[in-house]
Image 1 (cartoon, rainbow, N blue to C red):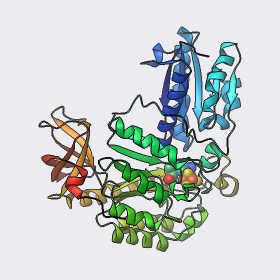
Image 2: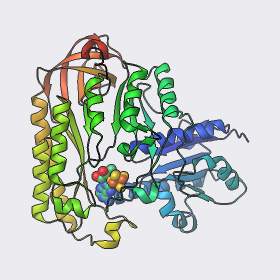
Image 3: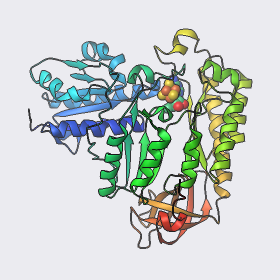
Image 4: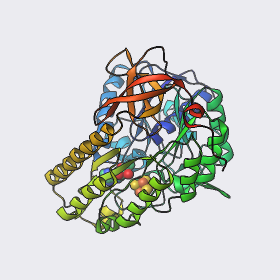
Length: 453
Ligand code: 5AD
Ligand code: SF4
């Protein structure tokens, strides 16, 4: 039943959460609701939450407390919690804090219209059931916040890996893949809508499987939809990385030469405690193979500092792994204990906070140095940049990314967001390349046509 209420969704956490918010947009609009411009103008504010680390949850709690103040002036306001925090704290949220009227887990978004009606009838409403099948395959996301150039497409949900530190298998449930047909249909629509860059998302993309269709096959089929859309994916696992995919990336100019490949740690002992089923040697061999098959490929990774029982020696091995690979980018975190995980049940979170902080800052400092050098090596190189928008620092400059995912800033001239521009790198910092634009170009012009698979 349609209602003319206005809603506002705030999203915290990973790209997957942002993609989920677009699905919720679609469900609510389909139900007759309208998006509001600000939370103050909304009848319903939904906060899509993240549980991956303690500080992510703290941010959400603080925001919920702020929303309570809006609730004081607008008694009719409905506040909801969506996503990963829903299951774990449903009782606390609803009973103790009086902050929230509705709690919805990541697999129950189709139920939101019904739950909102329960709230209208004066009840609190909760659905945190996880599903073995839900992929929202038939729902076309409504992309309200993006730039109209880059889009995320979710291809699978959940994770069965059970890394010992990670709460995701508990908050998002078991792995399941979306049918390939529905993914390709969404990509086709994005192509017709003028999108230029698509990132295929899943908690563990190499487990993608739809009958005979593997992740490599999906990437190949995606690349064929439109040769002028570039494709990325996130995140794969180093275990069982599909080698055939590397050849497909090398052959298809519109599959980006950039791989996010989370290492987490650099020593075999730590990888074992983390339940990451590969050794340092196997990880490094995979990196070598990737570099061999895809010349010029760039890498990013995820690293955790101060996981349970981490010794100074293990920390040094993480530093040395990072140096050996020479990542172009890294997401680096201090370990944050999560309830229900194997680490919580089995190990003690025994690395003192100040040691975690010190190790993390050593990891970050080294990574900044590595990036500085790697980016200096780019000076003089030519890249194809997809312009995403105006640079943060100056209206006169544009900012975009290379195929290898490096941020590039250059003079606006008459280029526009959405253009592919050939540039030559003139200068660099650890985070950004500065460049001079050469000319407007295209994937086919810059990289040549695809090699027949
Ligand atoms: N503490 C710190 N970092 C974590 N990550 C996952 N769980 C935790 C945790 N408990 C990191 C991992 C993962 C990324 C998405 O978040 O590095 O790859
Ligand atoms: Fe978490 Fe590991 Fe699954 Fe990534 S692969 S979501 S870190 S359990």
